[in-house]
Image (cartoon, rainbow, N blue to C red):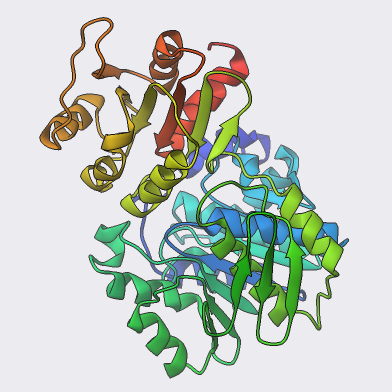
Length: 433
């Protein structure tokens, strides 16, 4: 099959086979192909990294900029259902034909250079954005920062939302080591924003060592407010009487603050009015981040897959009020700190519906059951028991079981890997459940 005859799905299947490793951090290969493709941006670029909160921060930036009338490119990963979700122009996913054209260009330019799936697709989307004449481009870092493919672009503003333990096989086993990797997206003389209230010293020291213009939460920007509204205070700009972001959850004001700090830093190039900020925050939408679906029983979708995110999910669940029973549809990758996630959630879940996931590196439902039992979760599989642990071969099956057992006043929390949430979203979309 010639490359020009490949559909998007065929291209994506092909890209899985190009490189011997699914993940290989480093910039030499991807930078070489970027230079051949001549990728450069004439508009402001905001790069967003961090352990948790990246997607929410990107979504708020996009929403506010669109409300202000700017033409915006947004790159995020991973996707939930369709690959096209990763590349958005003016709030809409890019169509298959536009992506295929860029894949062909990257394939022609790479020659003998071997690229991972993420590197190849990142280059394709960067080239698409560079050619599209945007007013602003927002790029979400995939993994870490310093050696992530997105870091071939010198951002005008770089945000690190939070630093916690995740991807430790690649980034290190302490917040200090991970903080240094995240800080790799900062640039000399350019704005570097950290939304973590307790930033690792390595992040601060690296920013100072390269003479980045470091903005710290609590020192350079902050928030105040009450139950009705909140205020942002930056270095030289205040935003008062703001409505709470449409994205629900305990940490969204931290994410919103980091986004507003980035826009304050770019105010001369991208001026934005007060009402446009208010509208952007109220209208922002991001599936799978403490997303509470309408109807009964209550269904919560959340891609919480590390202890830090699970602690936030637990706090958000506590804030929802009383529900007689909580069902959990949970599946995760085996390289995640599953026991750490369980520790945060075990006291909030009555019935665990564990699922296998369709990837070799996924933890089996049975292995998660063993970790629940090791954590002291005592449950019975007998019908009508107060506590249960059951296992399923797919998120759709696990969700269908939870739905069949939950009363209308109960709730179902679907969390863990993106694949867990995506599997349930697809099942709901197709009418299986």
